[in-house]
Image (cartoon, rainbow, N blue to C red; front, side, top):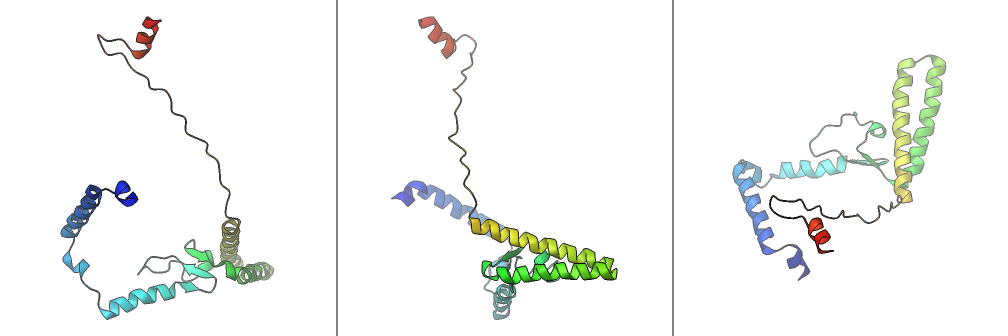
Length: 165
């Protein structure tokens, strides 16, 4: 009963008709059954998304723009269980930056700082997720009283109430 009250039959029928119209407008080969090779490639994509410190959120069949330097990538979803590993990566980056500065490898320093910022961002992301965030009370919305305008030849509600007093 609740489902019907929220999604009446007309809404469901309209949605199905919309989907049918969209499918009719697109090439039929997009709706064919995938081959075994295509299906295997699709499933393999999700296996390749698993990395040592989390899961990559890149879309299917899209290349990695960061050349698998995942700690730099905004699409990496860090696994909280891998926090220690990520902290080790961060500490190693700090040590490598110090070495590169000591040796005068300025190009190396720049790249390592980008990776360090990414690692620190991932750790901060983990902290935000772990804390669960804070609820913000937005209060109840206030609805302003309706403003009734006077139409030519008629009195407004305010005028009518004033006339009755």
